Length: 434
Image (cartoon, rainbow, N blue to C red; front, side, top):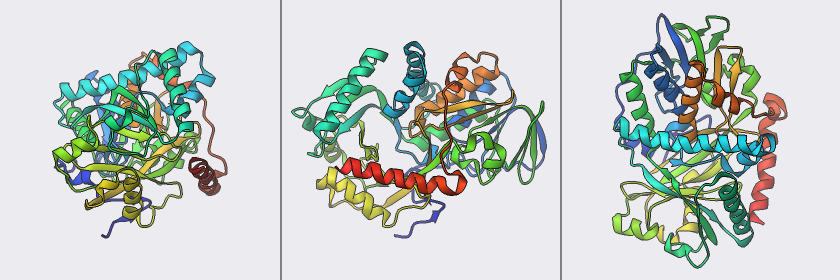
């Protein structure tokens, strides 16, 4: 099977194959004005545009490709509470227990907001509640149990422990030792959700321009965002392009661009296996992920496929023999799926920060940025859009809480930070294996 590979992007997506996109929005080809110009058509950008338009602001949204082309349309579809154990640890080291709890509560609100939007705007995106964190061995199990106990004590978040004697009731596999079940988190079709949000934004009056990459942001009291054919003069800018901000990212926001790194993550989809077989594989059909540093994640689709992800790449290039590599990992978990064909494989970049905590802030007084979701963006990025809308409207307390999280640049500069990250990941892969 031939797959298109360009800058680490692999395009043979089951998500794309299973949706019918609206016709492309026309590129920006003139000079225009708006209260706010949003750069980036993923969850964060579309959510910010929607929230701002519903508050009465005029909004222009610029997307370099198509809505949901980046991580928002390629991810594992897992909508998860929190920031991951590393991100939470970083926040707890910097904040008081009360402020750390406030950030956690924002992440929980992000799940509530996601479900409210699905209902309010009638977004058909196959949402299903339930998420499993899986430990592959006793040592990992001890770490997972400590995390669960901490989440219960510090955040009052309800979680269920699943021991070795019970885990077979949840998954038809011998791969895992134990697990934690989170009934608040869940999973959905990520591209359907993103396109649904964009439809709601258009209905609210947002002017969306696809195929309109921003390459210059002229700062000042009235910033100007320029594309190849047009420009938007505005009062506020929201930068929500993350690692897909484009080849001009270092020029647009050099103060923050080195705080995130692109990490390629890739998925496969099996052919449909039928409802009975799928139900036997994962009885309650939760989303699932192991707790290794370089992790595998999986879930069942509404049409009874297994969607399995992993094969993270830190080099910027898609892995060789992608389907064979991920299929091999899938069969370690579910060897009984050996007979299923793999018609789809795809992937692209997510953005990570050094400490795995989100990175929000301002450049001057009127340019906001949202980045560094570190694999937890499906629910949190949508919530970030709400926070930046609150800040623009003058209620900045919650946005400023996240803006207080301190971040470091990746070491080595533009030339060396990718090789340094690859060496670091080799260490963690070895640690996971041992």
